[in-house]
Amino acid sequence: MRFIDPVSNASVVRDEVVTAPGGVRLAVRRQGDPSRPIVLLVHGYPDTKAVWDEVVDALAERFHLVRYDVRGAGDSSRPSGVEPYAFEHLMADLGAVLDAVAGDRRVHLVGHDWGSIQGWEAVCTMPGRFASFTSISGPCLDHVGQWMRTRLAGRSARGLRQAAGQALRSAYIAFFRAPVLPEAMWRAGGGRLFTVALRGEGVRPRPGHPARTLTDDAVAGLGLYRADMRERLRRPRDRRTDVPVQVIVPTRDLFVSPHLVAGLAERAPDLSLRTVRAGHWVPRTHPDVIARWVREHVTRVEGGPLTEEERRALERARVRSRA
Image (cartoon, rainbow, N blue to C red):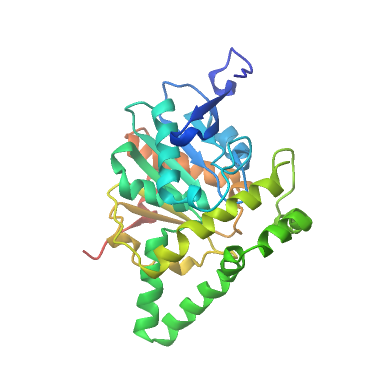
Protein backbone atom coordinates (compact mmCIF):
# COMPACT_ATOMS: atom_id res chain seq x y z
CA MET A 1 0.00 0.00 0.00
CA ARG A 2 1.10 3.56 -0.70
CA PHE A 3 -0.03 6.68 1.14
CA ILE A 4 0.37 10.31 0.12
CA ASP A 5 -0.33 13.32 2.35
CA PRO A 6 -1.86 11.83 5.52
CA VAL A 7 -3.38 15.20 6.46
CA SER A 8 -5.85 15.67 3.57
CA ASN A 9 -8.34 12.84 2.98
CA ALA A 10 -8.83 13.99 -0.60
CA SER A 11 -5.17 13.49 -1.46
CA VAL A 12 -4.66 10.17 0.29
CA VAL A 13 -3.99 7.50 -2.32
CA ARG A 14 -4.01 3.84 -1.39
CA ASP A 15 -3.00 1.04 -3.74
CA GLU A 16 -4.07 -2.49 -2.91
CA VAL A 17 -4.60 -5.86 -4.58
CA VAL A 18 -7.96 -7.62 -4.65
CA THR A 19 -8.01 -11.31 -5.52
CA ALA A 20 -10.99 -12.32 -7.65
CA PRO A 21 -12.37 -15.85 -8.15
CA GLY A 22 -9.88 -17.99 -10.03
CA GLY A 23 -6.93 -16.21 -8.43
CA VAL A 24 -6.94 -13.19 -10.74
CA ARG A 25 -5.20 -10.31 -8.99
CA LEU A 26 -6.70 -6.86 -9.55
CA ALA A 27 -4.73 -3.66 -8.91
CA VAL A 28 -7.07 -1.28 -7.08
CA ARG A 29 -6.51 2.39 -6.26
CA ARG A 30 -8.58 4.34 -3.72
CA GLN A 31 -8.60 8.07 -3.05
CA GLY A 32 -10.70 10.42 -0.93
CA ASP A 33 -12.63 10.14 2.32
CA PRO A 34 -13.96 6.55 2.76
CA SER A 35 -16.99 7.86 4.63
CA ARG A 36 -18.26 9.71 1.57
CA PRO A 37 -20.31 8.18 -1.29
CA ILE A 38 -18.26 5.66 -3.26
CA VAL A 39 -17.68 6.29 -6.97
CA LEU A 40 -16.17 3.33 -8.85
CA LEU A 41 -14.60 4.15 -12.23
CA VAL A 42 -13.90 1.37 -14.75
CA HIS A 43 -11.64 1.96 -17.75
CA GLY A 44 -11.85 0.64 -21.30
CA TYR A 45 -9.59 -0.86 -23.96
CA PRO A 46 -6.62 -0.53 -24.23
CA ASP A 47 -6.40 1.80 -21.24
CA THR A 48 -5.70 1.36 -17.53
CA LYS A 49 -7.12 3.02 -14.44
CA ALA A 50 -4.76 5.95 -15.12
CA VAL A 51 -7.10 7.22 -17.85
CA TRP A 52 -9.23 8.59 -14.99
CA ASP A 53 -6.46 10.58 -13.26
CA GLU A 54 -7.75 14.05 -14.13
CA VAL A 55 -11.40 13.15 -13.46
CA VAL A 56 -10.49 11.69 -10.06
CA ASP A 57 -8.49 14.77 -9.10
CA ALA A 58 -11.58 16.90 -9.74
CA LEU A 59 -13.87 14.65 -7.66
CA ALA A 60 -11.74 13.54 -4.72
CA GLU A 61 -12.86 16.37 -2.40
CA ARG A 62 -16.48 15.17 -2.61
CA PHE A 63 -16.35 11.37 -2.92
CA HIS A 64 -14.41 8.21 -2.18
CA LEU A 65 -12.95 7.33 -5.59
CA VAL A 66 -12.11 3.74 -6.50
CA ARG A 67 -10.67 2.45 -9.77
CA TYR A 68 -8.88 -0.70 -10.84
CA ASP A 69 -6.99 -2.22 -13.74
CA VAL A 70 -9.37 -4.74 -15.27
CA ARG A 71 -8.05 -8.24 -15.95
CA GLY A 72 -5.56 -8.14 -18.80
CA ALA A 73 -4.50 -4.53 -18.18
CA GLY A 74 -1.91 -2.56 -16.25
CA ASP A 75 -0.79 -4.11 -13.00
CA SER A 76 -3.58 -6.73 -12.88
CA SER A 77 -3.30 -10.37 -13.94
CA ARG A 78 -3.34 -11.22 -17.66
CA PRO A 79 -5.10 -14.54 -18.18
CA SER A 80 -4.33 -16.03 -21.57
CA GLY A 81 -6.93 -17.09 -24.12
CA VAL A 82 -10.45 -15.92 -24.85
CA GLU A 83 -12.80 -17.54 -22.31
CA PRO A 84 -11.28 -15.75 -19.26
CA TYR A 85 -12.57 -12.46 -20.71
CA ALA A 86 -16.22 -13.53 -20.85
CA PHE A 87 -18.77 -11.38 -19.04
CA GLU A 88 -19.16 -13.89 -16.21
CA HIS A 89 -15.50 -13.39 -15.26
CA LEU A 90 -15.66 -9.61 -15.66
CA MET A 91 -18.68 -9.57 -13.35
CA ALA A 92 -16.88 -11.79 -10.82
CA ASP A 93 -13.96 -9.33 -10.84
CA LEU A 94 -16.26 -6.37 -10.37
CA GLY A 95 -18.05 -8.16 -7.56
CA ALA A 96 -14.76 -8.89 -5.81
CA VAL A 97 -13.79 -5.21 -5.98
CA LEU A 98 -17.21 -4.18 -4.65
CA ASP A 99 -16.90 -6.62 -1.75
CA ALA A 100 -13.45 -5.27 -0.89
CA VAL A 101 -14.17 -1.54 -1.08
CA ALA A 102 -17.89 -1.19 -0.36
CA GLY A 103 -19.17 -4.18 1.60
CA ASP A 104 -22.95 -3.82 1.66
CA ARG A 105 -22.89 -0.17 0.52
CA ARG A 106 -24.18 0.68 -2.94
CA VAL A 107 -21.70 2.44 -5.22
CA HIS A 108 -21.98 4.94 -8.06
CA LEU A 109 -20.53 3.27 -11.15
CA VAL A 110 -18.80 5.20 -13.96
CA GLY A 111 -17.55 3.39 -17.06
CA HIS A 112 -15.79 4.36 -20.27
CA ASP A 113 -15.56 2.23 -23.42
CA TRP A 114 -15.36 -1.44 -22.32
CA GLY A 115 -15.66 -0.26 -18.73
CA SER A 116 -19.09 1.06 -19.69
CA ILE A 117 -19.99 -2.06 -21.69
CA GLN A 118 -19.39 -4.21 -18.65
CA GLY A 119 -21.07 -1.54 -16.52
CA TRP A 120 -24.31 -2.10 -18.42
CA GLU A 121 -24.00 -5.83 -17.79
CA ALA A 122 -23.48 -5.12 -14.09
CA VAL A 123 -26.41 -2.75 -13.52
CA CYS A 124 -28.72 -5.08 -15.46
CA THR A 125 -27.69 -8.30 -13.68
CA MET A 126 -26.90 -7.11 -10.14
CA PRO A 127 -28.65 -3.75 -9.82
CA GLY A 128 -28.88 -3.89 -6.04
CA ARG A 129 -25.18 -3.13 -5.75
CA PHE A 130 -25.36 0.22 -7.52
CA ALA A 131 -26.79 3.60 -6.57
CA SER A 132 -26.26 5.05 -10.06
CA PHE A 133 -24.45 4.47 -13.35
CA THR A 134 -22.73 6.91 -15.71
CA SER A 135 -22.03 5.41 -19.14
CA ILE A 136 -19.49 6.98 -21.49
CA SER A 137 -18.80 5.69 -25.02
CA GLY A 138 -19.71 2.09 -24.23
CA PRO A 139 -23.24 0.91 -25.00
CA CYS A 140 -25.01 -2.20 -23.77
CA LEU A 141 -24.14 -4.85 -26.38
CA ASP A 142 -27.62 -6.38 -26.15
CA HIS A 143 -29.19 -2.99 -26.82
CA VAL A 144 -26.87 -2.50 -29.82
CA GLY A 145 -27.97 -5.85 -31.24
CA GLN A 146 -31.65 -4.95 -30.84
CA TRP A 147 -31.07 -1.42 -32.15
CA MET A 148 -29.42 -2.77 -35.32
CA ARG A 149 -32.21 -5.30 -35.89
CA THR A 150 -34.88 -2.63 -35.51
CA ARG A 151 -33.25 -0.31 -38.03
CA LEU A 152 -32.58 -3.02 -40.58
CA ALA A 153 -36.09 -4.45 -40.23
CA GLY A 154 -37.72 -1.03 -40.56
CA ARG A 155 -36.06 -0.44 -43.94
CA SER A 156 -36.46 3.32 -43.64
CA ALA A 157 -33.75 5.37 -45.31
CA ARG A 158 -32.92 7.09 -42.03
CA GLY A 159 -32.72 3.84 -40.07
CA LEU A 160 -30.56 2.17 -42.71
CA ARG A 161 -28.21 5.17 -42.74
CA GLN A 162 -27.88 5.00 -38.96
CA ALA A 163 -27.20 1.25 -39.05
CA ALA A 164 -24.63 1.68 -41.80
CA GLY A 165 -22.95 4.48 -39.85
CA GLN A 166 -22.55 2.31 -36.75
CA ALA A 167 -21.39 -0.65 -38.85
CA LEU A 168 -18.66 1.57 -40.28
CA ARG A 169 -17.65 2.72 -36.80
CA SER A 170 -17.50 -0.91 -35.67
CA ALA A 171 -15.45 -2.22 -38.60
CA TYR A 172 -12.34 -2.52 -36.43
CA ILE A 173 -14.10 -5.17 -34.31
CA ALA A 174 -13.94 -7.73 -37.12
CA PHE A 175 -10.19 -7.17 -37.29
CA PHE A 176 -9.79 -7.54 -33.51
CA ARG A 177 -11.72 -10.81 -33.64
CA ALA A 178 -9.49 -12.25 -36.41
CA PRO A 179 -6.76 -14.70 -35.39
CA VAL A 180 -3.08 -13.73 -35.21
CA LEU A 181 -3.22 -10.47 -37.17
CA PRO A 182 -4.28 -8.06 -34.39
CA GLU A 183 -1.65 -9.50 -32.03
CA ALA A 184 0.96 -9.04 -34.76
CA MET A 185 -0.18 -5.47 -35.36
CA TRP A 186 0.13 -4.50 -31.70
CA ARG A 187 3.52 -6.19 -31.30
CA ALA A 188 4.83 -4.60 -34.49
CA GLY A 189 4.29 -1.09 -33.17
CA GLY A 190 0.55 -0.63 -32.88
CA GLY A 191 1.14 1.39 -29.75
CA ARG A 192 2.63 4.17 -31.86
CA LEU A 193 -0.52 4.23 -34.01
CA PHE A 194 -2.61 4.38 -30.84
CA THR A 195 -0.64 7.39 -29.63
CA VAL A 196 -1.13 9.10 -33.01
CA ALA A 197 -4.88 8.43 -32.76
CA LEU A 198 -4.96 9.95 -29.27
CA ARG A 199 -3.12 13.05 -30.47
CA GLY A 200 -5.65 13.33 -33.28
CA GLU A 201 -8.37 13.69 -30.63
CA GLY A 202 -6.37 16.29 -28.74
CA VAL A 203 -5.14 13.88 -26.06
CA ARG A 204 -1.66 14.74 -24.87
CA PRO A 205 0.31 11.66 -23.79
CA ARG A 206 1.44 11.89 -20.17
CA PRO A 207 2.90 9.49 -17.60
CA GLY A 208 0.41 6.66 -17.17
CA HIS A 209 -1.51 7.22 -20.41
CA PRO A 210 -0.77 5.55 -22.72
CA ALA A 211 0.46 2.98 -20.21
CA ARG A 212 3.95 1.50 -20.29
CA THR A 213 2.16 -1.87 -20.52
CA LEU A 214 0.15 -0.81 -23.60
CA THR A 215 1.29 -3.61 -25.94
CA ASP A 216 0.69 -6.38 -23.40
CA ASP A 217 -2.63 -4.80 -22.39
CA ALA A 218 -3.82 -4.52 -25.98
CA VAL A 219 -2.90 -8.11 -26.85
CA ALA A 220 -4.52 -9.58 -23.74
CA GLY A 221 -7.60 -7.39 -24.06
CA LEU A 222 -8.43 -8.74 -27.51
CA GLY A 223 -10.21 -11.45 -25.54
CA LEU A 224 -12.88 -8.88 -24.69
CA TYR A 225 -13.87 -8.65 -28.35
CA ARG A 226 -13.69 -12.40 -28.90
CA ALA A 227 -15.50 -13.72 -25.82
CA ASP A 228 -19.00 -12.18 -25.88
CA MET A 229 -19.48 -9.63 -28.62
CA ARG A 230 -20.63 -11.91 -31.43
CA GLU A 231 -23.14 -13.76 -29.26
CA ARG A 232 -24.67 -10.61 -27.78
CA LEU A 233 -25.00 -8.83 -31.13
CA ARG A 234 -26.50 -11.85 -32.88
CA ARG A 235 -28.75 -13.03 -30.03
CA PRO A 236 -29.35 -9.98 -27.85
CA ARG A 237 -30.94 -10.45 -24.46
CA ASP A 238 -33.65 -8.29 -22.93
CA ARG A 239 -31.57 -6.11 -20.61
CA ARG A 240 -33.27 -3.59 -18.32
CA THR A 241 -32.36 -1.71 -15.15
CA ASP A 242 -34.02 0.58 -12.63
CA VAL A 243 -30.65 2.02 -11.57
CA PRO A 244 -30.52 5.77 -12.34
CA VAL A 245 -28.48 5.99 -15.54
CA GLN A 246 -26.66 8.95 -17.03
CA VAL A 247 -25.32 8.50 -20.58
CA ILE A 248 -22.64 10.93 -21.71
CA VAL A 249 -22.58 11.09 -25.51
CA PRO A 250 -19.45 12.46 -27.22
CA THR A 251 -20.84 13.66 -30.55
CA ARG A 252 -17.50 13.14 -32.36
CA ASP A 253 -16.94 9.58 -31.16
CA LEU A 254 -15.31 7.57 -33.96
CA PHE A 255 -16.55 4.25 -32.54
CA VAL A 256 -20.00 4.81 -31.00
CA SER A 257 -22.86 6.46 -32.88
CA PRO A 258 -24.87 9.07 -30.95
CA HIS A 259 -27.99 7.43 -32.40
CA LEU A 260 -27.48 4.33 -30.21
CA VAL A 261 -29.26 6.05 -27.32
CA ALA A 262 -32.60 5.65 -29.13
CA GLY A 263 -34.96 3.46 -27.14
CA LEU A 264 -32.87 3.45 -23.96
CA ALA A 265 -35.57 5.09 -21.85
CA GLU A 266 -37.73 1.98 -22.21
CA ARG A 267 -34.90 -0.12 -20.77
CA ALA A 268 -33.58 2.36 -18.20
CA PRO A 269 -36.59 4.43 -17.03
CA ASP A 270 -34.48 6.79 -14.87
CA LEU A 271 -32.37 8.04 -17.76
CA SER A 272 -30.43 11.26 -18.36
CA LEU A 273 -28.54 12.17 -21.53
CA ARG A 274 -25.67 14.65 -21.80
CA THR A 275 -23.93 15.49 -25.06
CA VAL A 276 -20.45 16.91 -25.39
CA ARG A 277 -18.62 18.03 -28.52
CA ALA A 278 -15.71 15.65 -28.10
CA GLY A 279 -14.15 12.42 -29.34
CA HIS A 280 -13.95 8.98 -27.79
CA TRP A 281 -11.34 9.71 -25.10
CA VAL A 282 -13.44 12.40 -23.46
CA PRO A 283 -12.21 11.55 -19.91
CA ARG A 284 -8.83 12.86 -21.03
CA THR A 285 -9.92 15.78 -23.21
CA HIS A 286 -12.79 17.07 -21.04
CA PRO A 287 -12.15 15.78 -17.50
CA ASP A 288 -13.74 18.81 -15.81
CA VAL A 289 -16.96 18.32 -17.79
CA ILE A 290 -17.09 14.62 -16.97
CA ALA A 291 -16.35 15.32 -13.29
CA ARG A 292 -19.06 17.99 -13.09
CA TRP A 293 -21.72 15.77 -14.65
CA VAL A 294 -20.76 12.79 -12.49
CA ARG A 295 -20.89 15.03 -9.41
CA GLU A 296 -24.34 16.38 -10.32
CA HIS A 297 -25.73 12.91 -11.12
CA VAL A 298 -24.41 11.38 -7.91
CA THR A 299 -25.57 14.33 -5.80
CA ARG A 300 -29.09 14.11 -7.24
CA VAL A 301 -29.30 10.38 -6.48
CA GLU A 302 -27.88 10.90 -2.99
CA GLY A 303 -30.38 13.69 -2.32
CA GLY A 304 -27.63 16.22 -1.70
CA PRO A 305 -27.77 19.99 -2.20
CA LEU A 306 -27.80 21.32 -5.77
CA THR A 307 -27.69 24.86 -7.07
CA GLU A 308 -30.61 26.14 -9.11
CA GLU A 309 -28.41 26.02 -12.22
CA GLU A 310 -27.52 22.38 -11.53
CA ARG A 311 -31.18 21.48 -10.96
CA ARG A 312 -32.17 23.04 -14.28
CA ALA A 313 -29.35 21.25 -16.09
CA LEU A 314 -30.36 17.92 -14.60
CA GLU A 315 -33.98 18.47 -15.53
CA ARG A 316 -33.02 19.24 -19.14
CA ALA A 317 -30.98 16.05 -19.27
CA ARG A 318 -33.83 13.78 -18.09
CA VAL A 319 -35.41 11.56 -20.76
CA ARG A 320 -39.06 10.61 -20.36
CA SER A 321 -40.04 7.09 -21.34
CA ARG A 322 -42.97 6.79 -23.72
CA ALA A 323 -44.21 3.99 -21.45
